[in-house]
Length: 605
Ligand code: ARG
Image (cartoon, rainbow, N blue to C red; front, side):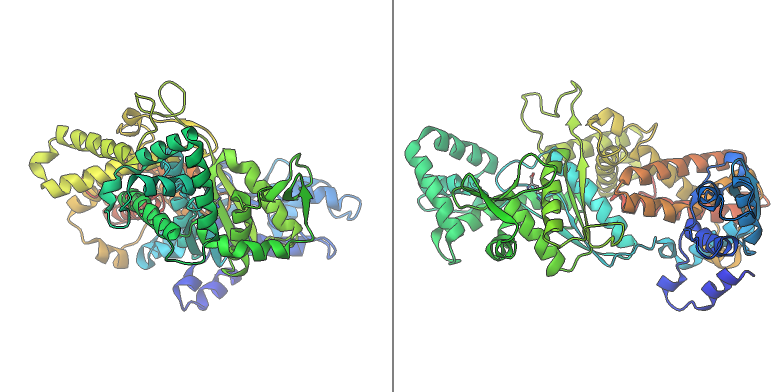
């Protein structure tokens, strides 16, 4: 046994300690030792390990030699060129059960072939202890994910749907990586729109305190009507502006502006909640109004940075043409005052180390300015290389387009309502199931649950599989197709694996404890290695905030499985036990991927 892995396995007590880290991290531990032995004392280097995807017949490679050579040149006569550095690194590598063989290629790459026995044992260990032991280890204890964040009384549009889906996935991946995540819905509940909404409520419903929500009806219609009044009638406009001042200045929960505001927020909240429940997204509302009482104090702390410009209070940001306005010329606060204060709160009160904002790319500039101001204020480290935490990221995303290549709208060019969209996804997937004759086999409840899982899963996956920065075209036909890279295809693939296992009639719980996985066939090994790379893919998707990386992994997993299944007989073969375990491991990893993407797995389809 190698020194490294035996010290790691001997101290096992809790689940988290059983987590040995990704393959990359484990290899890095070995290469750290070899680099230390290879290099003169005054030169240090972090191992550069990368999956090689089968290049040169290897699984991983260590890429340090080239860059080290340029640092070693002239300093040490021991090395005659990059290949020699690679050879030396290879020679000093401690022995390990992980590695089958190593070789040096090209300008000093150290190629690594993993031991198939070790791959098999690692998978078996995961099956016994659960996929938790493959969770990535991130250096963060607490993070805020600020996502969804629609505006009260305004429409919750597909942009908010994207934010909800992407933000939920990022939160799930971080949670799986043992990070405590504060899921924050930064709803727009404090804007100037409330003046007209409140005035319109007073005017239209003199008995507004007694009426139920139904009386107000559709809040978006209500919004439009009040906006119309605002634009047409100067008296109304005047009153509305006064109402904002009264609302924002009010300290009394019981005054009528506050109460009207609460009522309007309550209606919106119920509508949002319907979407979250359908999508099974968990979120805590912490709207703009929450930070309002802290704004004055936070700005006071920034006095040295704030200057006056055309009557407004601003912070100048190097490299930006316009400053960040923190108090408007009329003395009111704005979006930026709230975001600056929210950031302060999250860093200082909530002690988050990583704060992630999920909005369309259109808001990139706003966040860049807020983050720069926070650096100037000393809330965030000035140099991320020296001090990586706390840190902030804006996770931007592109537009959702319709067939016509323009912004996604309904035929009558209205904004698409999310509930309608989800209804249609469910309906269409239910029809597809009925076409397959499932209505005769299943109960109505089963049919409904499956239609929801498939329909909503399809909507989410179609969004997540693209690089989030690109615009994508919304198409029910495409996302609900059972061919190609879609949730439907993947859910079928998973259900098929479950059925192979079920039909074998073997007790998998028992096999997990007594059976052994053997990876002799190339396609068994290929599938096994892909399974083992799950943790580093999730780590990559988390650190780069790119859910599409996980989608790609999942799709490739199902392709690898198909290859294995068409070339290796499972049931009735000599290798039945081992191969069933491989099927089970594939199903477990697929389900975890679904879970991280917010998709409900289906066991029968
Ligand atoms: N309510 C905003 C919108 O609909 C998004 C808020 C995003 N979060 C934030 N902290 N600014 O565009």
